[in-house]
Structure formats: structure tokens, C-alpha cells
Image 1 (tube, rainbow, N blue to C red):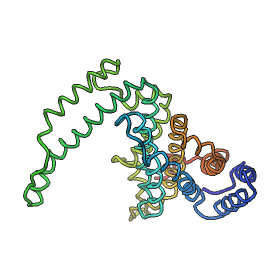
Image 2 (cartoon, one colour; image 1 turned 90 degrees about the vertical axis):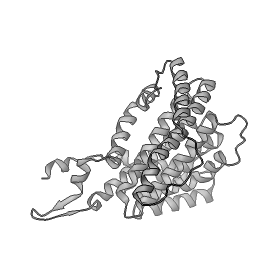
Image 3 (cartoon, rainbow, N blue to C red; image 1 turned 180 degrees about the vertical axis):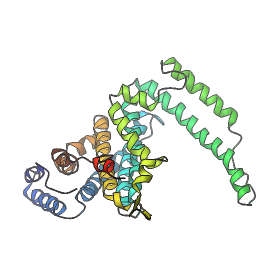
Image 4 (cartoon, rainbow, N blue to C red; image 1 turned 120 degrees about the vertical axis):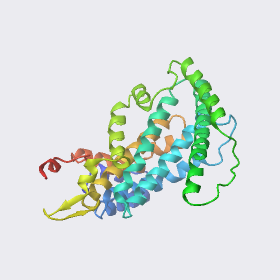
Amino acid sequence: MTGNPDGVEHAARSDATDDDQSALFADVSEVLHGERTLWRATERIISLAAPYVDEVCLNVPLTAGFDVEIVSRTVVRRAHDALIAVTATLDSRARASARVHLRAMVEDLIFVKWLIGIDEAVATEYVRHRARVEALQAVKAQQDFLPTAYQQLNAEVPRLAFRDASDVLEQARAELADLCQQQGWGKRGLSVKKMAEVGNLLPEYEFFYHLSSKAVHANLHEMARMTWGNGSTVDISSSPFEGIHADLAVVYGTWVFSNILEVLADRLDPVKTLVSCQVYGVWLALVLVGPARQGRLPLLIHPEEFRTR
């Protein structure tokens, strides 16, 4: 997907100083007139955001322990890491897999928007209970699986430094369930979909879950896309749709990343500074606004696919 998105060069020309203005204009022009425009623009966003993300995440005072503030900062780091992973995957032969990173990104967006919208004390209690449950679930999962794995590999099962997690996991689950019921969230707590409803993110939930599910689950439409032939033989490859997979990953990965930053901007000053930065706005416009104004936001499925056998 290439082209000259409306407003990008105008925004570049209005930068703070003449030197910065010229450098940005030259960089934007190079990206616009080069190959893989959207990918390279996303890489610029990643590079620009890196020092702000570091400011949010490095040397953080741990005054209140694991709380909503730490979770918010973690979400910023995870989103930045995920966008890095998207662009790294696009430059590999596994390009079609770049979409898998969007699942965690959109769940983080939905979760953190819901979390910062509830009472701070309740939110902190919730994240501590849930973190304990999820850690114990990991212990239980490996205790159930690893003995079988070692046996299948004809190796002796090592003695791991964990006690049996079953009882303590059930206790932790009961404590989390009590908190959730007290808040009217039901015994199991709110689902991601319900959190999306609360945060007015239901369309995003539906779209991104479908987009990412096509990459992480057994999906026959995706398998059919990989099968091409001449009527007598076929080749099976993800390469015919690799450009579509790439555009989906970079455009919507950038979209989720920018939304996470917007949600957390009022809580984290470095994030607020970043989203207010004109250079950031220019690159964001190139990746998102330009394709939108051209009517070329990436599609999950194209009409032409229904005209093929």
C-alpha cells in the first residue's frame, strides 16, 4: 500500500524548527517514495516512541507494589514490544504470522481501559489476586505436562522446586471469585468481551478477535488461501497473500498501539508528551489517515476471493 496521504507533507512543513522541519520532510518523502511505505513508517513510530517507553518503564519507583500504575506501564512496554515483533516478522519468511501479535495488543487495550475506569483500590486488589491465580495456573500447567513430556522423551523427570499447586490454586481462585462477586462481576469475573462493552470497545473486540483468530486457530478460509493451482496440481504457500497479511499487521498493529497510548496518556506524562508530538502525528497519519482517506484500509477478506473456485 503506497501513495501520498493527505496532510502528511503539510504537517511536516509545520514542524518546530527549520532544521527539524527539513529533516522530517526529507524522511517522510523518502518513505513515501520508497518500497514498503507502511512498514517503514511503522518502524519510524517504533523508533520515535522508544525513549518515551523507556522513560515510562525504566527506574520506576515501586512505592505501592504491583498496582494499577505498574500494570499501565507494563501495557505500554508490551504494546511497543508487540509492534517491534510485527515489523520484525514482516521482514522474515513468516510474514503471514505477523497478525498473531495483535491478539495480545487488543486484549491489553481492552483490559487496561476497563481497569483504569474502576475504583483504584479495587483495581489494585483485583490485579494482585488475578496475578497470583495466573502464576499458580502456570505452575499447575507445567506440573501436569512436564512429567509426560520427559517420559515421552525417555528422560528422567527432574525434581522441580514447586510444591503441588492444586490446593493453593483453588484457594487463590476462591479469593479472586469472592472479590469479583463483591463487585457484581460474577464468580468468574468479567470476560474480555464484557470489559470491551464497558469500555465502548466492542467493535474493536469483534474485529481484532476475528483478525487474530484467523492466524492462531485452525481456520479453513486461511488454509484455502494458501492453496493455489492450475486444476491438476496445487502449491501450498502463504506467499500469495503475504502483502495483505503485512498491511493488516502494520496498519492495525499501529492502530491498537496508538489507542493504548491515547488511553494511558493522562496517567503517564511521557506518553502524553509522545502523543502530543507533531512528528508522531505525522507518521501516524501516514500509516492510518492516508490509507483511510484513500478508502484502502486493509480488508480481512476481499470480494475477489468469492469469485475464485
